Amino acid sequence: MELAHTFNKDSTFGAAFAGFAASSICLGVLSTQAYTYFKRYPLDKPFYKALVVGLWLIEVADQVLIAHAVYTYLVSNWGLVTILIAKPVWSLILQITLGVITGTIVKVNFAMRVWRFSKQNIPVTGLILLLTFAELGVACVYTVKAFQLDSLANIADMKVIGSLSLGLGMATDAVIAAALCFFLRNLRTGHRKDDSVVNSLIIYAISTGGLTSVISLTTLILYNFMPDNFIFMAFYFVLSKVYANSFLAALNTRRVSRGRGTDAETNTMPTFLMVGKVTQRTYHLDPENQAQSHLSPTKVDQKSGVNSAPDYAEAW
Image 1 (cartoon, one colour):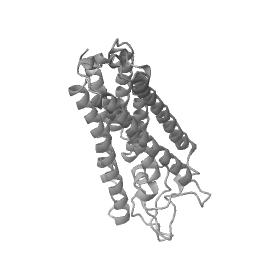
Image 2 (cartoon, one colour):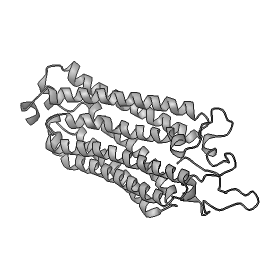
Image 3 (cartoon, rainbow, N blue to C red):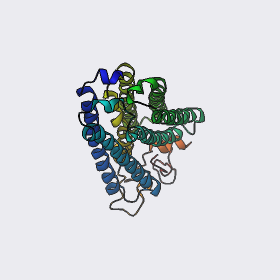
Image 4 (spheres, one colour):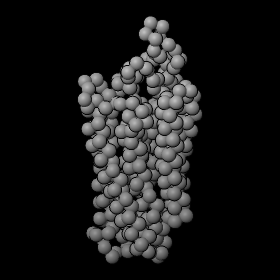
């Protein structure tokens, strides 16, 4: 009953509406990134194309659920404070699961990136996957228990489970960022162009992990100290779309971060296979390919007289 007694339209209905608006903007950015991806990389692998489409569809469904929940509280039950002590609307609960599914997909892909950069380091990659699926499992438990609530006002009773899920998400983001930074540093070759690529990837890993961690931490703090309003929900509405956008941004900036052309718009060669090819008369070793190769980046082909490096395999 505390939620109804301390009712404030700005911190409840207003916060929910603000979160819906912010998540709508994030979905628009995600849609733009998806369009850019298919236009820039028309010959990309079918798996990555399916992944992009899948993430976009999940986030569209997530936004539909948010819209339904916001409409139910702000329109269908306009002015009825008692709606806050009724059972939580089903779409508000189910949205939690879809959000975590998006985060899981993105984190698994970043875990595979760590796997390649680290030359198949099982302990680190395994830790990331363990934390990722643990978060998914805890979030599913939270969803089940939320459906059993008699009142939305009792959502504070699940602080432990909710905090554990958000905490696991923060830990996963931190481990991924730290692992990428550590293993990427080992890929520096001493060549300015190649090292600039590595530095760009390190900065990207830190900024991405930092942004998602900040949003998760903010949601966690608000949920624990201000459970009688919807401000923490507003931040959570945005979180999954930030994950999806970070993944699309990683795909769409491959050409910039590597300093070489990866577009296949005017070529017949698949995008992922172009990076390691000869440009002019010098090879530049891709940092991800170096993580998988035992060859020295400065090894010289005696016959051709140019630096040799194996062809680039995958973007991730």
